[in-house]
Image (cartoon, rainbow, N blue to C red; front, side, top):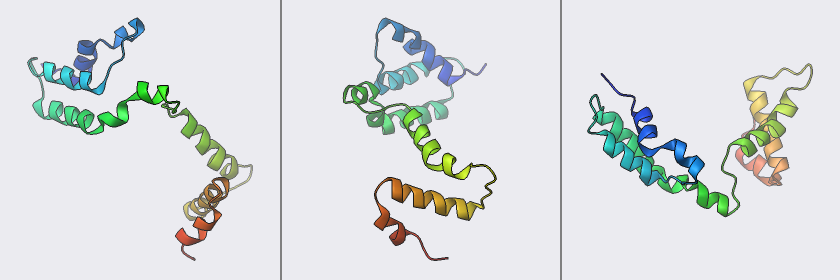
Amino acid sequence: MNINLRFAIVVIIGVCDKNMGKKRLPEDVIAAISRCSSLTGYDKAAGEREAGYFEKNKERMRYADFRRRGFFVGSGVMEAGCRTLAAQRLKQSGMHWTVKSADSIVALRCSILSNRWEDFGEHRAAP
């Protein structure tokens, strides 16, 4: 019987205990993957791949530190920015766009809204 590695990790590190105020670090997940290696049906290649991912990206996963420093951690801010930047302009009533035209107008709006107008001409080739 094969185990689902992610499920086993969740059980081992006790994600439910976040309600008790514990903060989990990437190192906790790496250690949990290591503990899974003794389980029947453990997929060594998958375990190494998952542990490698957390090891490689652990500095990007310091969410408590990021929040403490006032950084946004979720994707909501980025999604709202995309909606404001692109969707409001491209999805107006009666508008139809080709991919090339939509790409051009989004690049233009990005340049204008980020006060980097001079960069637009430098990075866009003439048609």
